[in-house]
Image 1 (cartoon, helix red, strand yellow):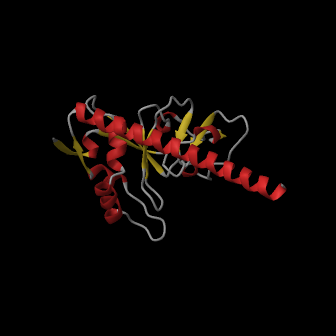
Image 2: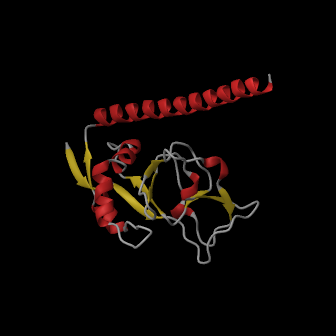
Image 3: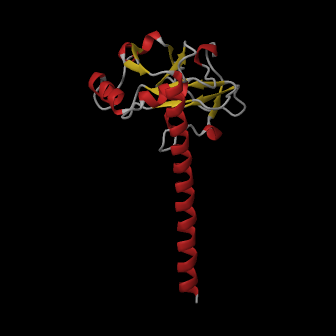
Length: 191
């Protein structure tokens, strides 16, 4: 099993930053992924991204299927693999956009690795800033990543996918159960 520095297997691009902040504009040409666009399981909720007009050339900050977003600023430094095609969508400056350089590296596996306790402990020990923690591009690029054979990566990704589906089903079950409890209670109150 190979262990390599992250910078040898991915390109790292800082997300889009505007001089005066980014304000949503109806009819904007591009959409922006921000920290608030992720659910509690760090899954992108792309339905409500703000639209805006970029001040500079947007191509370097564009996000595509298979890219990995790494949250560089904030209390939690999570990673998310982009699983859908996104058109005219940029990542905010609080993210790094990671693009795998090698065919023998599954982006879903790498996002999983970046979220594991070993990587998270490294980020916590190396992060700077008082209050809002920041992981520099240099710190991120030095992270050691263990790359197993592609067959093992595929198994890990399959297990992750099944676990996410289970989470989704459990959330739905809890929601349905809560509605049922409310209905039964209201029935008792109204009778």
